[in-house]
Length: 384
Ligand SMILES: Cc1ncc(COP(=O)(O)O)c(C=O)c1O
Image (cartoon, rainbow, N blue to C red; front, side, top):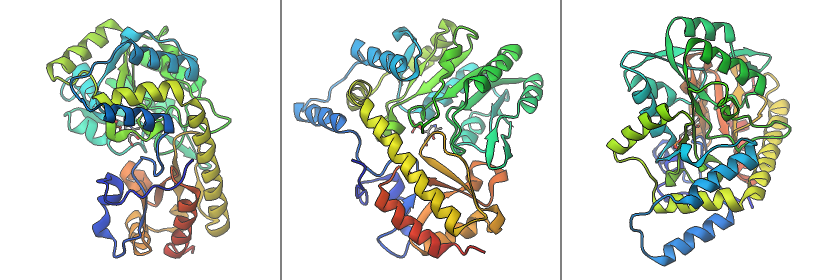
């Protein structure tokens, strides 16, 4: 089911953007967060039918669409949401950016927890907000939230926090008690909580995803931004949506989406989302098992060949976080070693200034691709 798909020359941002860096044609890329195997068969069948129909005129999100999302939340996250709370749009990033624009003013403080998905930095800076970092605590290879520092920043005037739940790149699936403490602090200091839950379905046993939707009844200023794109390899379809119970916050975002003509989704995204959320639970479970197996392969490889490296426990996402700082290479050095052997990973320094010497590796690949990649990795990076 999770077999390699050749994505060269398909206008793939991951595979076709980096061609010029390599002196060979058979390079392997483990960077950008999409999957190198096909989506679930029912989604492919639905899209084929839609293509065969032949008309791609204006398309609306109807009850099937909204109910599919609500039932997914109920079934997969045991959380009840109301269809009227959902605002469909295109990308998670455009929804996050619009939300920051709508809910805060120029120079207001917006907080992120670093290391984090690198686009969170321009998301805040390009909106001309003041970026406040709340670095995660890192100890024994594990990451936790620093609530003391968070409270200090909140006291000093943070208006909005962008949470990454689960967290890219450190692989944490935030527990109920952690989110509970976070929401209490947001409530105490009146900080809007904007939760990016794009990785919510990529959860490795025995972890369980907790959506901030669990706290809707405790605190009203919570927004979820979500999409089936990571789970089902649909990022190119632009199928993101926001879930906002507060009518005040929802109407504010909605009127800006309307003003910019960015409320609603394209025909393919709508079809794909409905099928993904109604017919593909087994596929998601199988994929999580596959990612977990790949993680075990990577873990054994690192223990055997790089005993001084540290691999963050992967609770969720398909993005492994490798600490190579004990080998004292910079990210730039590792990148050039790897490129020389025809392989690319993401550089840790992109995710936070404290992460030179770290690498992020995408495990949403076939087992064969991973094993071939690790063979090249071993030739690329000297282990002393
Ligand atoms: C945490 C997180 N948010 C957002 C995105 C991008 O989402 P979109 O392509 O829908 O803007 C990514 C992609 O890697 C991500 O990891």
